[in-house]
Image (cartoon, rainbow, N blue to C red; front, side, top):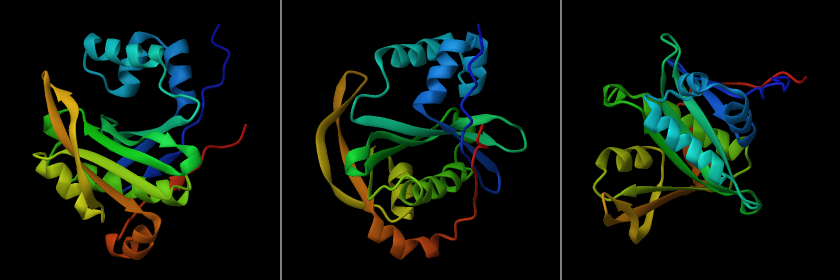
Length: 203
């Protein structure tokens, strides 16, 4: 019986986007009390294969006793289309650090500045609302657009992690970038961030 109250997400609002919070509580509610169609619509999944992948990740556990996450759906304000996700995984709360990740769900959404519009507020939210001291990001060394995006927000190259990901059966290196709180405090005014935070109402 669906009696549980759905967790109310934090909402970040930019010029063109809503960034709607995805937390462990939201995932728990979504995957235990929603239909497959509702899950696909909420997460912007294209087909049953993507749905099966999300269900598999949920069933295996998305958090541990020391790792959590806080992700955000990227929603186009005018069309209400879910464009992708941006947020934090491998969030080690006790050490105040997390890895930021992002992805658009379709190539047609790329090269329109959506991820640039989303990532700045997500970084600001991480430092100012989540209390992070360090934000990390990993990218393939050939992923020039992703690396440029990280550099746009002051992330510094720290090194190469060898044979870090398996892509199509091949072990590939990753480049590690990071930004720490003093960097953010020094740079944030130059980013000209324009966003609002809508906190959920208490019930």
